[in-house]
Image 1 (cartoon, rainbow, N blue to C red):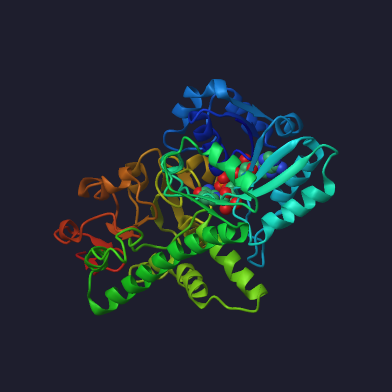
Image 2 (image 1 turned 90 degrees about the vertical axis):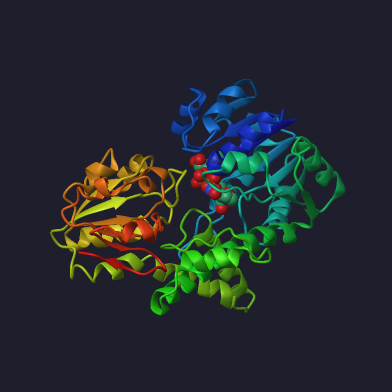
Length: 433
Ligand code: NAD
């Protein structure tokens, strides 16, 4: 099929490449000329495992262009995969979606299915269809379908090719049939619903996962008080298949482009209907507090960070991605800098994006050892394999071996025999210095 995709971010580009891998001809549209130029050279503008290889393999089935008009007017199906970031009041900013919808109305002059893959508030698909109906060209005929995305950054290609499910929210059989054809070669569970339910499935799923993380983090905080070990507690809970063993890793809170904004957006939507989602509100509050957890622990060692050399290991919101959106490092590092600390940071892939925010304020290190050398304290914000592989020899490079680990990277049994201070989340503190 001839498919156009608006937006070549983590969702749009991965979707495009995976649809091409399954045999479709895909045209990727973006407004970022720099990105398009990079992709035209066969280079992925984002870090995502397996993506460069699939881009190369399917190069003859993918076109990258700024020319939305011919891309949309030649497509049987147009996916919208642009960003829906958070507005100041917590609601979703739909400006990028509407810009694409306007472009589609101006360009398309044939029958076509418009697929909203961006995460949008319940009712948006209906509004998009109404707008297209009212503003369409003479020979255009649109059906709008909700097809939310569930991929996780870091495993996005795998999550798309072998999706847990494909949800199709359609209000007519013909559009649903077209979508079944798009996904014909994806051997995964498919669920056809109405559009509102599809839109809700996305928010309800993400908010549930955020809730699970905040729940385990609150239990972890209590474990510290009562002397229990959150890793053992989570393992014990995870055997219960009703609970499941995923998303039970305690840490310094969730980040990324989805959980923070999608919890706030659903909370906003429910407030709009005069309801309060109490559990979601609690998940947001717990997460905000959790991001400051290591700073509070650090106060046991230093009253202020002024004049200290701080080693920061991990900048991205999670391993496997170069994405910094809502990363805990973005909450903590400004506090270190404001206090007057010198920050030496290491991240295997996040450095270039961080430099756009902090070009000169931070010293970027090429190895974790370089960051650790002569440091007064070390903060771990991301559990990259390179960081989990560090040993005492590496930490011994510090002036004082005080490690505050926000991702429980190391086994307590190994750390407790060392002459170090090691504090993690939901486990007892080791203070051997
Ligand atoms: P992103 O910010 O990485 O990418 C958005 C892209 O859209 C950018 O390249 C931007 O230049 C482009 N764009 C903006 N306006 C455009 C226009 N008028 N025409 C064409 N392109 C335009 O966003 P993302 O992380 O891929 O997220 C996209 C959507 O998918 C969001 O709604 C998000 O909530 C949802 N989602 C994201 C993830 C994830 O893990 N990132 C997972 C599931 C769902």
